[in-house]
Each structure stands twice: as C-alpha cells, then as structure tokens.
Length: 466
Image (tube, rainbow, N blue to C red):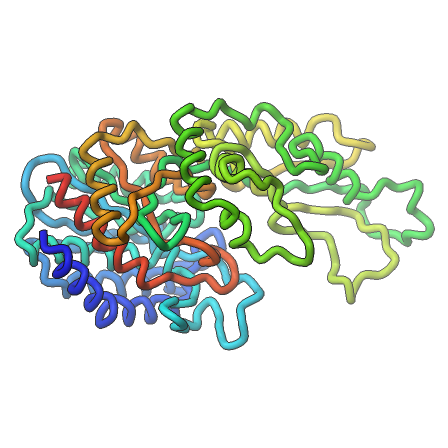
C-alpha cells in the first residue's frame, strides 16, 4: 500500500467532505431516547440518520448498499453492506445518538454549536461518535482506490447506545442472516490515551444505574422544630451509600462488585501507565488543590478500567440554594451510576445494588432503589498474531509510534452482545476520545488530525485482515 497516498487522500476527504457533514450533524440535538422520551415526535434522531444515510449513498464505493431500518417503536438503524473477498466479514460499528447538553460550555461554544479551533471540532457527538460512519466509509474507499482487497463488510450504526443499546438486540436478530459470520469487529466508539499513537481498547466496564429515593416525611417541616427529632433524609442516603462506597477513600467496599483482574490486563495497564504517566490525571480540570485518588500510573489505569467506582450523577428533593429555606426536607433522591468490572453481569449488579440499599433502612426510613440501566462490560479475546502485527505496523506507519493496548472505563453494550454472538471474532475497538476531549461533558471535541490518522490505521488493518 502507498501510505503517503493513503494519508493524503484521507486528509483531503476529511477536510472537504467529512468535517462539513460533522458540522451539520453536531447542529442536530439528537439526544438518546433515555434523555428524550419524545424522540420520535421530535424527529432529531431521524434527521441524524437521514443525514448520514444520504452521505453514505453518495460515496463511490463499489457494490455499496445502504438502508435505514426502522423496527416498530424502536430507534432507527443505518445498515450498509460492501461486497469483498472471502466468506467471513468485517462488522463496523458506530452510533448517532448523543448525551444531553450539560452546562459549562465556553463562551461562544455549545452542544449544538459546532466550532473549529486549532484542529479541534467542538460540539456534542462529533467524537462520541458521529464520526464513525464517515470514517468507516472513508477507510473502505481508500482501500478500493489503492486496489487493495478486503473482506465483505457490513456496518451497523445505531441510535440507542447512550441509553444502553436496549433497541439493538432486536436489530441484531433481524439482521443476523445479512450480517453472517464475522471475523473482525471494528468499533470506533472508544478512546485514546494520547493523540500520538494508535490505542486499542481491550476491555470495557459495565454499568449499574438507578435512583435511590429516601423519604422521612410526607411534607417538609420547620427545621428548628424538627431537627434533632426527625432524621435527615440526606444523612440516611449518605449512610446507605456507605454500604457500597468508602466515603474516605472513594473505594467500593462491597465485594459483590469486584472481580479478579486477568494478569495480561495488569501487564498492559503497566505499559499504558508508563506511556501516559501523570497525564492520566493532569488531563482533568481539577478545582483548587484537589488531588487524584491515586498517583501511580498503573494503578490509575486499573482504577478506571477494572475496578468498580460509584458516582452520584443527579439529585432531586434539593431546592436551589437561592430557594432553600429553613425546612427539613421530606425526601432526597440520588441518581447513582456504578461502573462495574468488565467480567461482571450488569443485571446481577443492579439487583445487588437494590438488595444492599433497601435492606434494613436506617431509622426505618422509606427507601427504594429503582434501576434504569444494567449493562455488562466486555473483555476482548486473545489478540491474534496477525492483528497484533497489523496494529503495530499501522500505528508506526501513520503515527510513528507503536500501538498501545488499554482498557476503557466507559460502557459500550454492543461489544458484550457481539462478544457472545461472535466468540471467534477478533476486535479492533478504538476511538478519538483523548485528553480533554470530555465526552458527555462541556466542550466535547473531536481532534481532527488524530481522526485522520486513525482512519488510515483502520484501512491498513482491514487490508491485513484479507
């Protein structure tokens, strides 16, 4: 393959064709159905899928077929097929649904306001991961332009990932005969440790999430009259959280949410830690003199990839400070997000959370935990020698450095589904979410120069798979 020609063509393709489409995509507030229950009436997910499908159909790829599939009552899926050599296929994956707006965007920036600055395109969803469908087709195109053989390729671009991909099993079942036997899964919904080399995701944590509700009164009462007699709902909630998390260290103390870490992953964490060093924590916008939970790079990698961690991501029953009077509140509700190790079952984890939180409530308070998400993680199968060689070769060719393998702390439910459906398949799970790209948060961006090189790496690996 002519790597210089590949790099040049892909760069032009991004600048002239892909970036303008990503700008259009970022403007669409196509929030995932979990955050927009009226998604069908609002039409934003359909607009995003139609934008992507129109672009895909316009690409000069030999034998390309593209279809938007809509099963009754479910979010749409963009499905494409490209013929190739051999029987075993490559499956390419991405999604078009987005997380909600979030506050804290810089002046002049916003979730639906695309802004290009110093090679970074800001806005919700560009990196997570609206770019995937465009990069996938660009990688296929450049192979065909180089006259390089590739296996048959199918692509699934869903619209429910940020809600746990609960619509996806129905589509996988409906498409199983068209997808066929898959030898390589290419997923572009993950991250990278830096923007200097190819990063390959070897594992993903699962998630157990839901709302803890604590009620101590039927209505608020004067705090001067009741405090000291009526237990605080916030204190009760805090004591319940102690059953899961040590508030002093932040470590999850409930052994039900831990698993043994494979030795191979410990070794990979040590190497990734040596490459990244303190950037594992300096990339975060710490306030004041806030310190990270650990300052050993290898332990930091394992903390964010193989160990459970609890976050309180939302609350009800707490009035804004400006509206808060001297009232002992009747209830506190906390939205909990527990990241669980890759080998733990998401459904079992949510059941354990419910059991732990509801048992024997402090002060006899009325306590309930209603789960709304339980997704299992994923651990990649052993990497085949040909793929290891192809990954390093691609990274050296396009970045000038070897590839690095590392787990990720987020959840992509699709990977666990595919791991079960295609146990013999190899996986290339990667992405563009690097330092400060801030997926799901304010000022999310896609690093365009890195995305160009990643597209070239994907093309190289697909050629090697043939």
